[in-house]
Length: 238
Image (cartoon, rainbow, N blue to C red; front, side, top):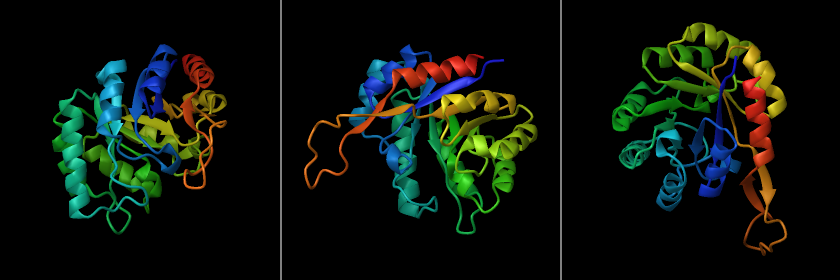
């Protein structure tokens, strides 16, 4: 039985390559090296011009670091969600915890309302929760569409027992998507665990020959790999 493949991309070239390679949908973000943040308007519009916006779930995260947000940050995310959906995004990817490490229900509800019926994915903030299973049960009650999780492990292939438990808890009421260090070679085991989908960045390094200078950071930049996308799609199709 095949499962859905979602590729995390950061630009229009990666988006087009991933869809051409057989990916079912995309997560669009910036700064994958820090876990991803909200993409710029220019990136959003260039990606929507390159692929069907309905296939794109936009990560809306105002900063790196933890997932406890103040009122101003919550408002920024709500505005960004509305803007993405107004431009045709198929869904948004969000996550918020309270100071005790539980689900921030009020914030999630505000963001879900801002999504106005677009798909809502709760991201790997669940894996930073004090009790991921309790957060998962709370998400079931909050009618989110999808949960992206590694099962609380650094890599999802190491969190298979928890992922299997989440699938049983969901009983088909929401989609359990395995993400976190996924490699094509892990996908058969994740499929066997019963997850509905896998999420991976399929990244390689490009531009390493270009100078970055003393103020430009690390040499090179991330780019989507056609070979990794193809291998992931083949593994997901069985």
